Length: 217
Image 1 (spheres, rainbow, N blue to C red):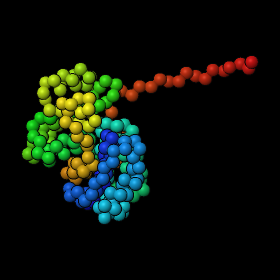
Image 2: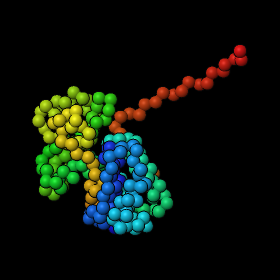
Image 3: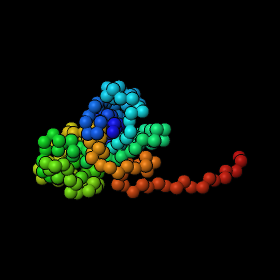
Image 4: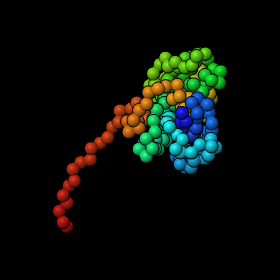
């Protein structure tokens, strides 16, 4: 089965084409929200010598991370499924990041982190084993003080776009390749219309007041 994987949860946005778990092509750009997503997909398909009709499944990284980027990836996936009826799988972007490090040779307990803005960080801890990765602490929001205390404790932390401010963090970005590899190991599929970004905050909104009638001057 040929699969298209899309990972837009960070400023390093990537697309990959895989045949089962074999990577056929991957392209990454670092333009963030200025990414020309359709062009990136077409270039990756061309590099993989694969046509659109050959894609049977789309795997999409659902974060945590850039809400705008993830929503864009989900919208692409929804449109593709609606038009072509492809299968869809969702992948945790931090789990994909953990799998990438496991395949690179890392082992042991490692915390993966993403800046959640507002002085908070998404954290998830995985055990990287010879057989694969195992989540031992679910993704959660942590305050800055807790995150900085974690770094001071010397525990290994890996994540995107953090090293400049926090040199103790190993800089690493989620990759479409490993979103696809995660998806290739699973058999469950989802409806694209049901996809949602990983977003742990309660969504707050303020109801607009009723319109006032302003008498004529």
